[in-house]
Length: 240
Image (cartoon, rainbow, N blue to C red; front, side, top):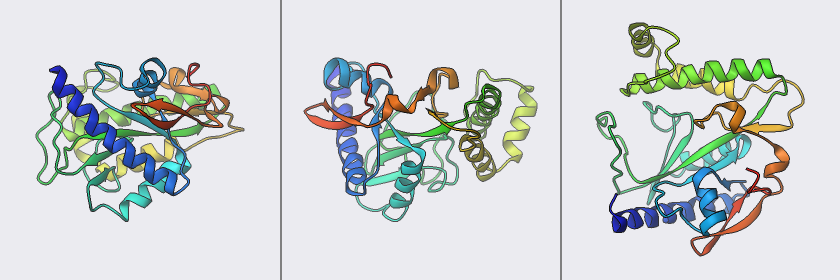
């Protein structure tokens, strides 16, 4: 992406992040910068120079409250896209989009009529996770397969995760409604058996072993500079 175009994109994403943080702080909801956005805050006090997206995390309890809050207020400049606000949504995390914008992504499926493709930030729910390795492995296996089915159903061609034949996968994706796949994945993500001392982002790309952290890494949250503002980050940001 050409440098000035990338900077314009970053500034729109920053405006979306500002509004997201404002809503969270107005309603006492916890959030934190995550993934490359947090790396940018630590290393650059802003965006990584070549980064083209913004990622934030929220404990599941706060994430669910934010979804309900946005469902009641979908007008104005912003739109919360999640499976409970858009029937054919294909991610297990949410996108907070800015109205009257358009984000061009590499090789997306054709948009559905009326589908919002605006510039966005990604909001990842963090779930408490069972201390039992067998349960985590089973969750990770099933959630990963459900993610591939959601992508297949939406028209993306998944290149890995082929635990069944391509034709069977297409058949399952065609038959299973979006609402069923999301309900099943939601139930699995929030299944935490035993005394939970860790949190995981099932929506991440690295699998539970790299996405799981002790709660003490996150809390209490602190503030860190990002593009001349201060946003919440994990307590031990460098360890994260």
